[in-house]
Image 1 (cartoon, helix red, strand yellow):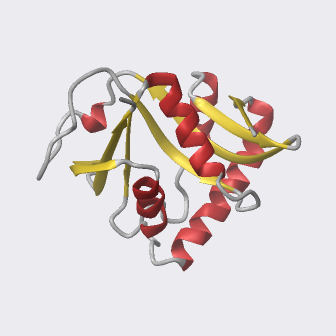
Image 2 (cartoon, rainbow, N blue to C red):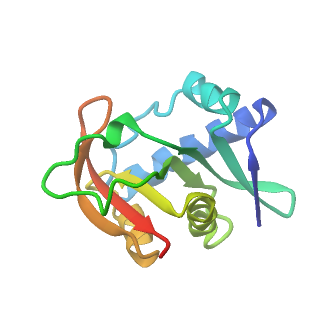
Length: 162
C-alpha cells in the first residue's frame, strides 16, 4: 500500500466511499456520527485543495481515505474528564474510511500519519465501536471527551512514538 495526497479527480470516488461508510456505520449501531450527509462534498473538496486529504492506494485502486494535518486543531483545545498525554506538537486524523476490500487499510493510514509526526490525536463517536477497537489495537490511549464543531461529544485518543 502507499499513501498520496488526494486530487480533485478523486472526489467522486471519495464521496462514494463516505456514502458506503455512512451505511456501514448505521448498520453497526452508529447511525448518528456522520448521519446521512457528512462529510459534505464541498468540505472534502476543500480538504483536497488545502492538501490535507490523503488516499491509500493498493494495486492502483483507492482503498482508503483520510484527513491529516499537523498542528493545533481547535477541536482538541479543550478536553474534559481527562487530559492529553502531553502538549507537544501533534498531527490529527479526521474522516478516515476504507472501502472494506483490503484488511488493515485504516491501520496502515494511521501508522503512516503517526510516522509523519510522532504524536497523533484522533477522536470518534461513542457508538463507533469499530473505530474504538482500531484505536485500541493500535496502541492509542483514551484521553477524555472533546466536542466537535457541531457540539457533539467525541471520545479522544492520542498515541506518541517513544
